[in-house]
Length: 390
Image 1: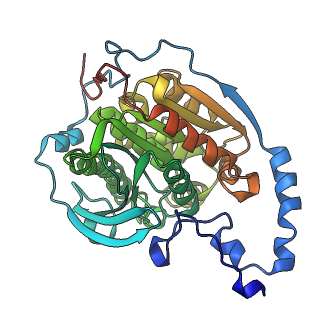
Image 2 (image 1 turned 180 degrees about the horizontal axis):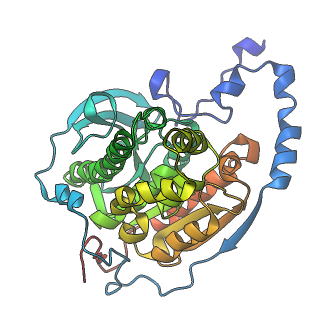
């Protein structure tokens, strides 16, 4: 009988809240079978619309004397938190997930990160084996779907060469509801400032988590990666730039000039913008003028870097109205013109390329890139000068 046939178990599966995503997302697992049957047709239709362009990295190879891209202006005052004593990390062992032991990590934020208890929470997937291992930090899509980061984390773990530290924070850094309801221009600016402070605190907090990881004797400092998506890709690029210890990274749908993004993006920020313009009688130009001095100190164009461009994958959307190509290209230039993958889609639909709808093609691309670039430079130590003024 079919019920007596033993089911194969993937070494990457777990249970409960530890469970890593399987081929079928949870929303589809609860979908009636007749609805699931339409998925292949839907996938083919959508995949046909998601084209890709690829520009390989064409600069010099990384050598012992090569320098990573880094900040070219004096770092803003908020980066001084990196010089403070490392924050204490509370470690709670959890159940195993296949071949991986999981640890929950909790530490106080260096500022107001807008998360519960003002804490940084992360989950460390650590494969139990001898020798030093690389580790990749996976930064969430705050306030949005948790599936893309989970899928990428699972893909990284499947290669078996890199461990993963996945941030569990889920509250948006920018509280659009509070910003939209600000009764006065002063309250509006204060709320935007609080959001910018959360962005900055999170970038520093990633460095604090890295302090903890590098203090472990089994973590290889030459194999420390970072992955971010949309807003978290901008945070990740800034974290890499001000810290200088990340050795490889993937930035998906990131750009420079947050003030431009918030002034032009047609998604959630559009409703915020329209409410504020009507309440205060501002034009869009005035809206941007009000937020620019607040957001400039966290601008990735001035702070991103810290990783040699041969070890960076940059993913952009060709029809992205939120992260327009000029701003995206500016960050790509800032990062040293690394390998560039352009998805022929808008901002939201690009995330389909990470899922079953597109056969996990982008997820596999990211995992493969991190696997290839996550090894140490033979016979040399990596040199990084990020976060310092020349």
